[in-house]
Image (cartoon, rainbow, N blue to C red; front, side, top):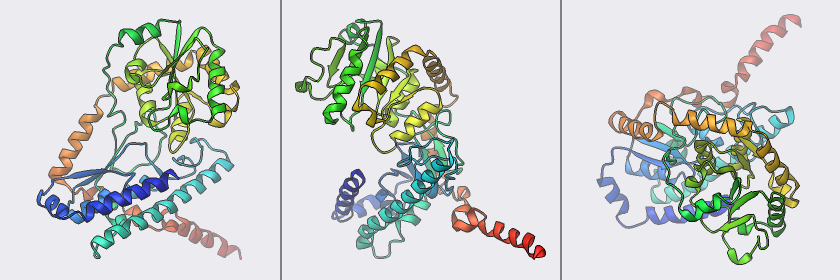
Amino acid sequence: MLIGVSYKRSKIIFAATLHHPGLLEKLRDEKFDAAYSESLDPCGFGIYELLGIENRAVTQTMAIMDGTHYFTQTPANPAYVPAAMIAPSCDRMSFLDRVRNTVSHLLMALHNMHTLGRFELVFFAADPEFAGLQEAIQKNSLVFMNSDPLLDFPAPRSSRVIDIGGISVSFGHSKLNQTWSDILDLRPTTILLSFGTFVQSYAMPERYKKSIVEAFRSFPDVTFIWKYEKPDDRISEGVDNIIESTWLPQNDMLNDPRLSVFITHGGQGSVTEANTAGIPLIVIPVVTDQTRNANQVKRNGLGIIVDKSELETPNALRKAIREILRDKSYRTKALKTAKMLAKKPFAARDIFVRNMEFLAEFGPLRQLDNFGARLNFAQYYLIDVFAFLSLVVLIPLV
């Protein structure tokens, strides 16, 4: 449903953009040196094609997605590269996990092909000679990923791919105001719960919210700060150790040493902020890439996963809180990870700016093109070669 809504909205926006009187001509007259666009909405690349901008790059707010492997000309191997959107898999998979992961990769590939085809209709209406979105996407010289090799699942990547994970996260932070500081002083342990801005707590099923309240009630020596958008619900009324707030300074709070644990939906931004601050996580993934992010956290020993279906009762969340407070290895690994991220030799913002400047001066960078993208399925995975070698071995035995 979310994908469908996004598609309809994007189609309306880009149809209006393409048919706005004089807009494309005005943009073309600017003679841009380079351009970049978010990969979740491919229409930007079609516009660059119409404008004749050759030096192009992709930016991606999430970690590498299933479709990204293909337009970066390095198809993912589902044997150990977890799908981003569907299969709840890690990189160490059982046979059934690999089956599910393969099906997930195939379904997303079909979805991407279908989506591109639907978007292309908008461009063909504006320019009957439009080459196609797939070709426009393949012309991107660089792909900037919101991921970090220290945290993400290892996978083969094209030379085009550049990691800029944490580019939106500042290593600096502000001191909490007196109100928040007093709240963090209430008890020896403080835990933050926030599902971000896209997934909001008030919209959860009532039974889930009651389970969360009951789980929190079980820890009277812990203060729980809950980002809850509708205070009139009075969801935590009568529970002294729960502090509700419609807004909170999340990054500043994560960087306060008095905060012990962050309970999150597993959005890329929230996970990155917690990793940078050295805070262990309890991840309750809800939609899109959050399951993948949660498995990434678990793989690195930085937190615990609680499936949202387990919120039917307070038991799973209660158990996760108890474990993450008792087992100090989560905190130790989180602090080590934060130190590693802080001491990386190159800042993500510098990497992005310098590479875009390089692309603007010397692009398009066709030297980075991978011929493997032109191979069909049988050629890429050597099925034809193994078939031939099998015949060579078997024929003398007949």
